Amino acid sequence: MATLVSLFVVDANSTITRSFDFLSSKGHNIITVSSLDEIIAELETPDQMVASVTLSIPENQTEFEGRIRTIKRQEKAKYIPFIGVLKSGCHADEVCRQPFFHILEEPIDENILLHTIEAAQSDFKRYNALLKEVSSRTSAIGLIKSGSFRLQTLGQAEALTTMLSLACPEPSVVALGLSELLVNAIEHGNLQINYQLKSQLLESGQWEKEITSRLASNTYKDKYVEVVFERLSDRIEITVTDQGDGFDWRKFIECDPSLSTDKHGRGIAIAIAMGFNKLTYNDKGNQVIATINL
Image (cartoon, rainbow, N blue to C red):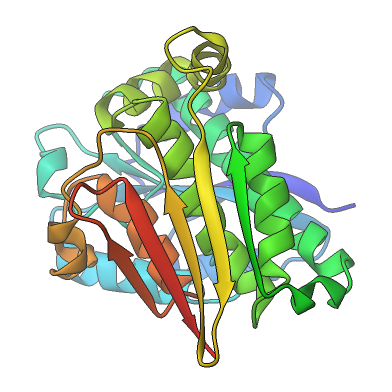
């Protein structure tokens, strides 16, 4: 079995190396490279699996963002969470967030760095478990023509994702996009955890605990996400409806999501990139129709 590793891109001026002993003491296998060009080579190294990449964000971000996107188009880099680190004096609001799982600002607290890496690697493990599950199934379920489903938990979301993605062309690609939509519907829709709060929970290591707590609370325990699957002559439509307050989706659909600095854009960008030809939201923003052309 390949060893999971935490990859850091560091230069001579990096202060993040001070945290390496602490991270190692917490069980993280750390490898370092000195430039973006070396990342792909590490992804090809036998017997290791890069589960997160942490790197500094330079002041000149335009070329940097383009290079990150080029790297993430590589098959082995596609699902790896990238954590950006802003040097002191830089402003997070000026950074395009879509390529990043999360953005930290120097000086970095070691525990915040630890919790962020662990949350990122949890996402990575979820993606890979989903891909493995999809690839291990037969295509018999692809005969599904239509169906309606209700779910409440993240576990149910993953199970339904596996089932429905197998009814679609390129199921391993569709699975990741659908997973993003269902997870967002639960977390940000029904459980009403906004992106600012999620950032705080990730950095404090309380994210999973908060999800469990809210799912059990009287306020949220009866809320569900409804998913409707329909195969038509020329397309598949998957409608996802949550019971939340919705959000302003227009600036992410009508504009280029890569230009937005808001964290909402990341899930939408992933969903669009992963298997869906179109996303159509209702006016409120608590329902989305994901379309796959046949």
